[in-house]
Image (tube, rainbow, N blue to C red; front, side, top):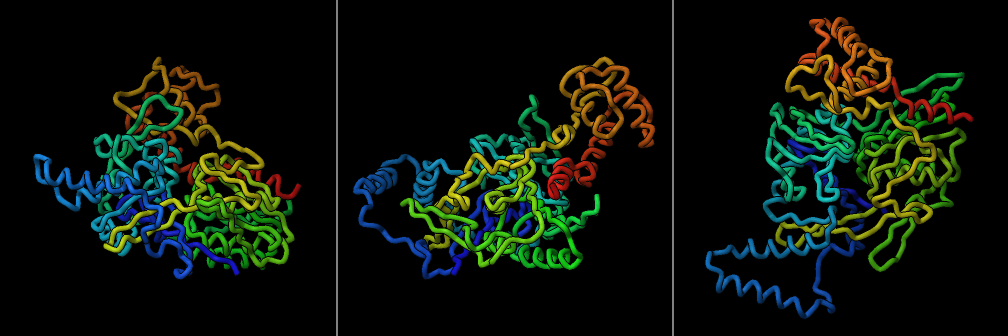
Length: 479
């Protein structure tokens, strides 16, 4: 019998919010479903507790008796726990005191409102794992690996993940300014994001008919409690329509409930190979299997990118090692398993307990799942928001000009090679764009024109009509 894990994600209601009930932003907490078998249902002092632990008590008494200012007992104890967690240098382990846990419970019970992105702490920086599909974060162009460096002009260097998230919290309809450092660019930029309700639909299906083949495409945006059921319904519908092949799209999917992954992989991974392995602190490995007798009789591919994380990577690497193609770019790289441990007073420690391994025993942590077929997206997918302090005019040079040229190329207004110089060809392209959009034909990129160009690029990215990764998956599926 398979033992499933429950993945609890902290919902950052009114800020960074996943589309399902779960854990801290970016941190996945797996718990065994059978509490009686859970090794952390309660914490007991072990026989090998170090004698030097008495130093903690001595330090406590020293501070209480001699420090020149009054110090709250609870603050000292909370500080000691925070210190032990911090020294682990693990972005996925953390401590939530009673007040934080109460706030969390209130957030879970609230409506799903926020900017709609999952974050993690990477190299000490609050980093976007992925924006949620159709969320405010996606609409303004936030992308995987974007680093948040300021929130409402407040520098967040030195803050932990929860402290940074607190600064982003707010009500639907309110704005938050986030300053972003995007890898590959020399200057940060600021995005104003209006908080809104976050969509909770996680399964999107369509059928592509091309070259005599009918291909089902199922996009999974996260793994929530209803995802596996919705997926099964969508797959059954497609199979009833006679699909010849299937593409599973987990690009930008930050993860979710492992139960959902198990149920989805039960359609594809045969019972003679594990879909997952779990290794504990003692190096003991447990393998998990489906009950599937044999594979599907049609070809299948998986789409991944740098925003595919955690549970998405479990799906991708299991499918890869089962012999299916994985198309796109290397995934995020989260290969650890956390459990939430109550401390008896309402506070909780979330601690990394396990590594999860691929069916063949590979640990993808911090390296990600490599695709079998690597395909990058067009260059305009990686452009930055246009920052306008004064109009960008003919003769201007530099990174901002190059960024706009790439956008104009993506929109079909510029065919010449990007050269970082606002030349005659670029001016002609800008005028043509302004004419099509009903703007004043100045040939200059002012704030209004910049917003319009940027908006069209975001619109084009979101409609996925120009999608070489999906095109390649379709091309390779029937070879």
